[in-house]
Length: 247
Image (cartoon, rainbow, N blue to C red; front, side, top):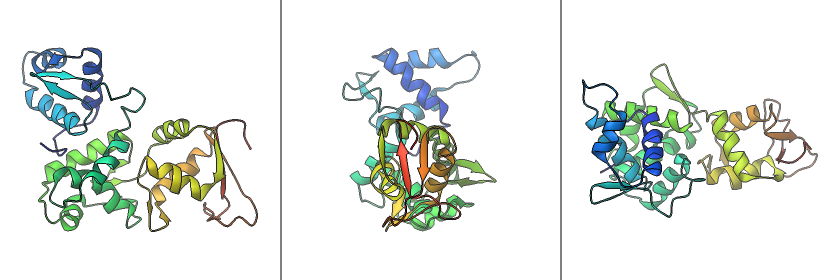
């Protein structure tokens, strides 16, 4: 089983919440809940979502019943991006589908510091040559990454700009913190979403945080003679305060 399943995104979270609400539910019972019309068959779609969740280690199967592991916490459970990062560290096998799936965002966008990739099918097969990845699976990957909040499907490709609502949730989880903006990227945000490669911060993450700074989620400022990198079009920001009263 692998993470390369033909999923669309929203059904993953819906099925996960249903299993949380009804631990011990069977696949047939899940199908009954989601098969709104008698015609058609959603068995394959249900199988794909369940396999995906099992591979994320968010659910377990016991005697054909799906359960919510006790070790899973409600606070962390929807941090899909964080779990993908963990999976990426668990294997270094270039032929492992889960390793490839969870590393595509990092290697195709963060490492080259590239916001947009038009032909992900070509680039992924070029980078991960040990595993043949079909166009159908690449399209599913893009849909899932968009659902996870890691970017947008645009003009047939993928624009890796993390969604502002995702960044707001991450900032809220970090809690009150103040320090150099560079340290926020390297020590705080990179724990959730890979965004630093050899000291270079991924532009997608920079743009998301700077846009977030235009609201009330955080406060950006400039401190003189600070031995850290500055960010922004005019390199005007190098200090950030999360939570609490504005700086």
